[in-house]
Length: 100
Image 1 (cartoon, rainbow, N blue to C red):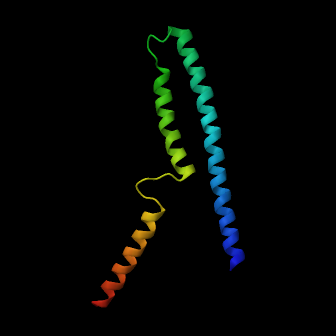
Image 2 (image 1 turned 90 degrees about the horizontal axis):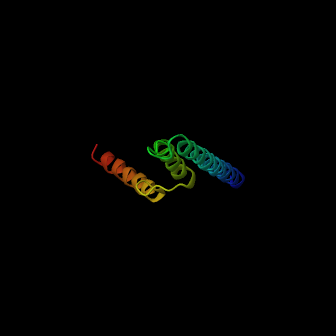
Image 3 (image 1 turned 90 degrees about the vertical axis):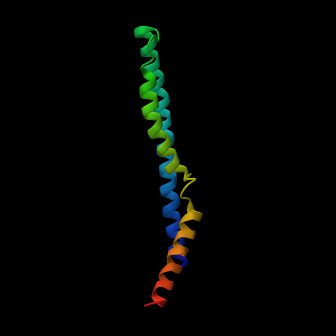
């Protein structure tokens, strides 16, 4: 049983490391390509209309969601919330069976 728990922890940690690694590679791609788009935008029209910011904004939103998933930051539904909700639902289930 202890060996199984250890393996589960290892696989969860490995999956999290993979997600973090993917996030950092996506961040590097973001920086490189947005810089290139910014340079292209300057070369074409000297930033009279900074259209590259639309790409930066759209891709940035996706990057934020990827970071939230990779680093486990969720202020609304964190691990504590999950545990409290599970406990609450289990207690409600027990109470509803008493009345039947």
